[in-house]
Image 1 (spheres, rainbow, N blue to C red):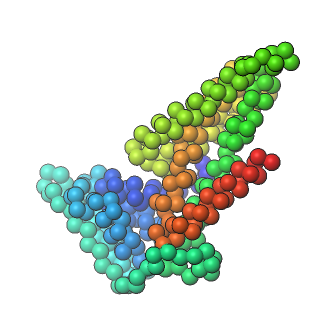
Image 2 (image 1 turned 120 degrees about the vertical axis):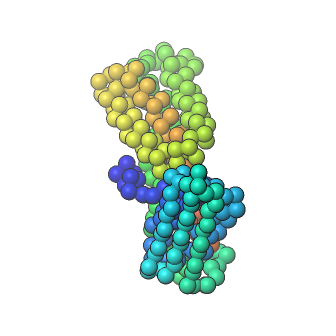
Length: 274
């Protein structure tokens, strides 16, 4: 994820809510290659109340996005703040085909969908599946056992309840809660993509420091790295994968694919728990 996430676009819905209309259209077209996005993007604008509220693009510039393959033209014009206070979103579509309200798994598997959604399915499944392979559940399941070895607790110390390892385990759980609450305040400010990059980078570094602390018997380093891991995981990788389905998948496939993604996530938890 650290390697591939820099090449992925920001969430179109997030960009639109921030007034970055042209960037939102480009991100949506990236996620719907060779497809007509005009109706979907128009619905996105309406749902975010951007067109009706007259918000401005953050960069204050004009943007035009054209997709020749789908024969759609999305023109987005915004005047600079001192010159104009209006914005026009003109969307013309060559196709008036009505999309289904829902679609089943068999139709998706056979490719009978109005849009090409295999890459969207891959992105969603990748995040949901590999969320558990970050090592978070290993920290949760075996934190006390790991800490017992880090602190070199004797049998007499282990019989004492709660012991040092158990207190630190409680602290790790509390750190995860704090991180999730912090993520609630940062997710719309920094964006999903940036927060995921920060989270995965922090997780990778924390895992490395945990190993170093364990191998060289540096208990303080190992414990601090475990806290850093929980904080980094809670900031991005814990909540954001659950948002990807609702923000990336088209509405007609949302119910089916989000259910599959959730099942995959729990299957990975079961495998790791073995």
